[in-house]
Length: 221
Length: 409
Image (cartoon, rainbow over all chains, first blue to last red):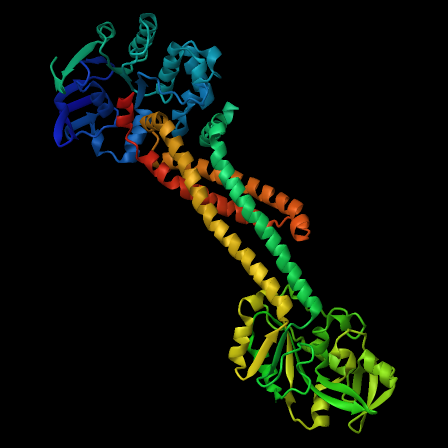
């Protein structure tokens, strides 16, 4: 699915170079549940955002299903972010003035090839995640766990092959964390989606089928 | 509600959920537009009234020979030196906008039965048009209208209608005269009678109504008859012009002076100038306010949009993450600005018109009616203000780096 070859990202900070990613080479197979671990500033999130078509690498290549992702035009990258990958973030990032149902429908606004009526699909996704009674609630009216489940539903809106999760349990207590991790596991095992999850939690890391560890931008395990 | 979920739903929902934060920006546009609409409504009605007043006064520009005295507008043509009648054609063919009617005349003091009167040669149709008070006396066809305030003639060119001219010339033949009220009274002249002028007999076809001016002491004959009678040739002593008020303020007098450099051109100064100056002042105030409002309004909207973009950084980052292009971000914010402009423009128009209707009669003695075209004008100005003010904050929003925003969290 993903082939990374000498992927490097260098930031310049006050004339000093910071290697956020340093010659990362790896393969991520379709249908795998990959966990990326590492300490703060190790480059985990940079790697995830690079896989998501948001951060352009300084050098190296990143192929997705054989195509070099960063040869894409900005519109093609936007379409990639909309259809091929779905993001789940630590702080959920729901649009605060839209209801749970509308939040899930936002990515569908950009997808003209929807096979299903957007509202039905959003309602079905919320139902799958146990939120059928919270469809018309605003994010602030939902619990933290419910907000994260809405974020997962939004990530699934356009039926992407890949879920990119950045510390999805970082703001949750152990019980809720377990709940979210189980959902991700189900998405991987039952629906065959590729999950790439960044976490610093050893307990969360156990859910992956493959684990990579980053240290100062380098792949160490 | 959700079955028609679209980009506009996202925009409206954001506006509605954060409406309290919108108030200051919206209020600035609304009040700004209201002030301009109010002033413009009063100014427009004032201009129309001035033009109507000038129409009622009749001719308001007088072309005289260079040596003529202009102490009294109404008697300046009497015994004045002369200039060629051809000057009338020169003005008419110049197609100057704002010249509604040309009325050439030749006046001399003569004595009739020992009584001094003023004999004035006129072109009847043009003279009638320049004297609205005569129009009511049945001297002319009812459809002869020359009021520039109600003019539908967009070019503002002269309205010397050939068919009209023919009809009225027929009504004042070479041996016909109209007699001023005072002359008729003194000489005991009545319609159908005769009067001898410089040895030639004329038929009195009409006794004119009292005007309270020197015209009451005049006998009017056809210009060409008077020229022949006085032996002046094709000369006139004055040309009265009905000039539109706005055209006068736009420099009509200067343009006339260019065409006729050897003449004196004057207006009914005390009336025209005061009104024109007032209107000019109102227009200047309105223009200055427009500039201030565009600047202040843009800054206010810019401030609001800047704060809005800052507040929505995370949301913008999220939208880009889930596939929004920069173009979509532009559309999202600029559509919101446009809505702000449309709502502000509409409210401003309503408020300004309402204020003008309430305050116009009290402060300026003018009855103001809504002017629908100002709604379109308000929408255009308000939308421009909103888009101008929003442009840079929106540009910033579209250039936000989602990676940085994601890493901020």
